[in-house]
Image (tube, rainbow, N blue to C red; front, side, top):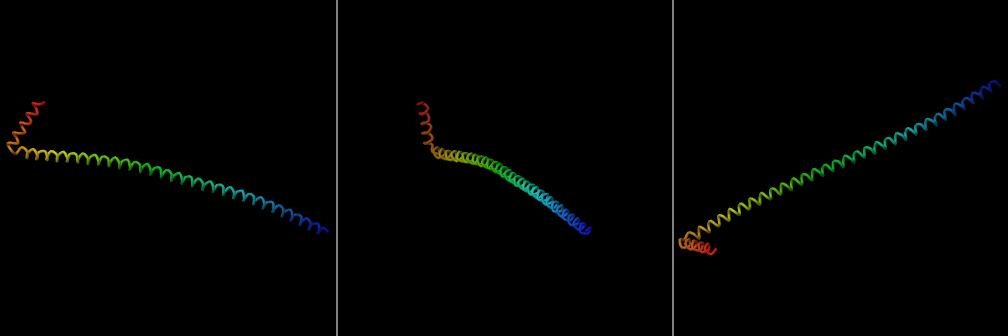
Length: 131
């Protein structure tokens, strides 16, 4: 009988230990699930921060590239305008030189004859007297 009582106590103690172990396992599983969820939340937060940082860097790079491109365009337009004005000025100088050369040749041709010279002088004097 004593052996039966010891056996019952032993079984009872084993059942209590099993229940305690089962409760400890449930608590550990809950703790592990909580840690896993926290780790996932932290991972998601880090990934979001990394994506946000990447997007910010990309936007800053785009903005900087556009600013640089705009500066280059303005500089190129100013250079083109300057070169155009220089070309126009050079063309005007060349036209003026050609006009003077042509006028000189026409005057030389017109004034090569003595009669033409006298007629030009008379016409000029009449013109001055009329005014």
